[in-house]
Amino acid sequence: RARQMTTINAHRSYLPGQWVHLAATYDGRLMKLYVNGAQVATSGEQVGGIFSPLTQKCKVLILGGSTLDHSYRGYVERFSLWKVARTQREVLLDMETRGLHAPLPQLLLQETWDSVKRAWSPMKDGSSPRVEVSGAHGLLLDTSLEPPLCGQTLCDNPEVIASYNQLPRFRRPKVVRYRVVN
Image (cartoon, rainbow, N blue to C red):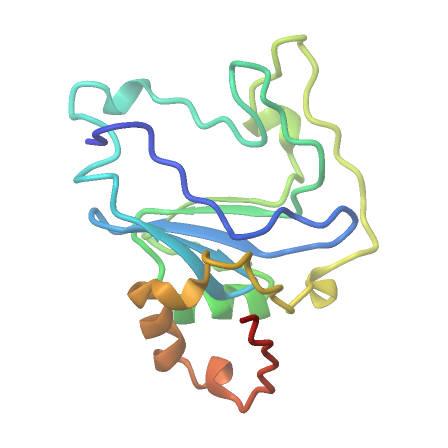
């Protein structure tokens, strides 16, 4: 159970008009956030199961907003909910294969919005989410990661660094530019 509300953030806001692949995992100990396959944040605030045994059957999945009218304005191409925490390699594979899987025992939900009215409850105003066909697809992902603000570097997070060391794709030679301010 969480000691408090658990929030995990990337080091920068999303860019309007730019597709990104987001994945969040929780293994009972750590929450991890991946942006375009790169682990960008972790949190250990949550402890144990997400729901208590008494309230497990009463939970509602709200995708793209909350009951407090904190709504998401944008597009979601597909959504998957897994029974297990995905590894970074699996997140990358999902991203490269466009995330569509044959039914697997660990895959609880895979939504491509083909049947919104049948599978999802309407919003407060009685309307269903609007489905729009997009010409964009996963190949247009922004794979560049902007540096965080001074004093908020990802390099300070050992979980993030460990994830980079495990994936050769992220260990390619890089050009590092820096400026010393004295």
